[in-house]
Length: 326
Ligand code: LMR
Image (cartoon, rainbow, N blue to C red):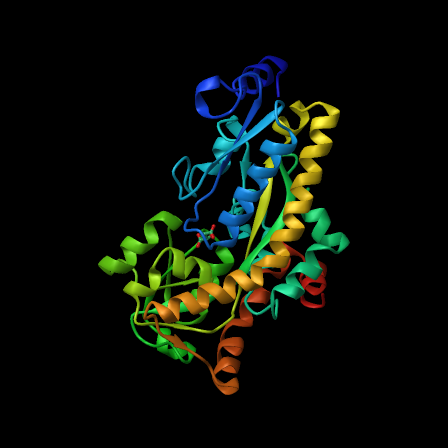
């Protein structure tokens, strides 16, 4: 980037006294799309801001904008490149226009659970993927697990055939689109902020998400039931721009990276209990959960397995094997 453009956008991130940050502090806006108080991304984002604001007091100040209030799915990555926001934590399923490699995280049933996904992210391959988009201007600070995903619809889904002919909201992921097609259903990519309305009005019949998203966004209120399919991972790239990171002096940058790493470790330790709590919250609030028998679950695995082959070339067979064997 030209030096003058860098100077303009970096100077634009200094605080004015009126916005809660002290004058002279570097302001880093952290924007995300989730909400509620029990969501793992909400908790981790707030913790990160709290620690930066205390430990880098006078130097840097993080302002958190949840619930797509600053930028939603469709605009946030572009906004990061423009310097309108400095920190994001989008789902790994939302990077298809920048790299096909993150499709590995989306392959159905590639991770048995979040522990396997965490193991993969700690391998050399997983760590390299954090730097996959540095030529674009994105830097990964860490992976935040969110949970395994479950299908919901306006009728119980016990076997893949139950989904035949239905329309499901998906994230903007080619893998997710292929997965829904493999169930004989139609995928409808849509921003997260629009999902509740689309389920309520019948624009789509179903969706797939974690317990935390289904609870905090109240999707269970407008769906017949949720099926414990465990079919896919939802995880986030906690990220900034190379421009922002390179604008920090050595000590500030080192502290920023240290806090990012520690918050990431803690978030991944806490996520399972947040998911379990939100599963309980759904039941307490009257939501219905279908538990699959082994034979029913096997039908989902069999229906979706051909999706791997379809993306093998784009993602890379070695990367797929590394994730599957982690
Ligand atoms: C979704 O779009 O369903 C999720 O990626 C939202 C989120 O950030 O958890």
